[in-house]
Image (cartoon, rainbow, N blue to C red):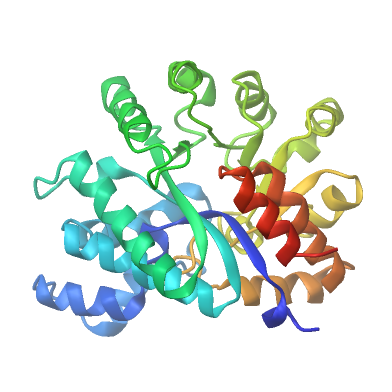
Length: 326
């Protein structure tokens, strides 16, 4: 079996970081950006000048500027899900920050429903399953973030499946965002938290204290045995994104995913941002097989182990378990 044949599950993928290049070029020209096609691509993808998460996040700027209409939000979501289906992804959780798409006057209702519409259209055509995870942002005001949480509740189980906290982790400390997850718990909204990517052990432990069962990245847990044991004991899923981790220099040298997997820590393998990182899930899998001792069967097992952590209905989980046999 080759990687293309593996039925895959995605838990960590950003919509604006995965904007289709052809759509970006078309829309940038429509919006009269004075950029060549090559310059547009350069604005969307990291290169060797990227040395940290803040450098990496700069590549979201143009994509967010282009995604300011209902039609474009719907089209970009639909196009991404169709692409994932072609890569043999059978379930995908797509995250994005609704507040980043309000520059031309869209309200959160319009933004969230447009993304849901794009996903539903792709689901009908391809039978791919999944849902939307709105992100609260570390650089947003408390009021804005709580508004995102309330809208997530409004659309929960109607396309939205959970929430996330994203953004510049080292600049805006995880400990300052307890209010988001207190509110999420009150409203019964599932959540994941970016932690342990650009910041270290303290960030991870605060995320765990807030009650998360999933960590976006979480790879810096290897810096502390006590935290590693806590993750294992509390049965936490790490949403691993290898290529992105190298690009942000969250990892230098060998990626810890093999160590984590062999130490019975649950990991899900993802791309983070297909366009920004210039990667797709099949290439990500191939890189893992090339650079670690993990096998195709290990990758299948990672997908299977992820199912219990998904923000979806029990019957969808049961179906996925039948589709991905170990």
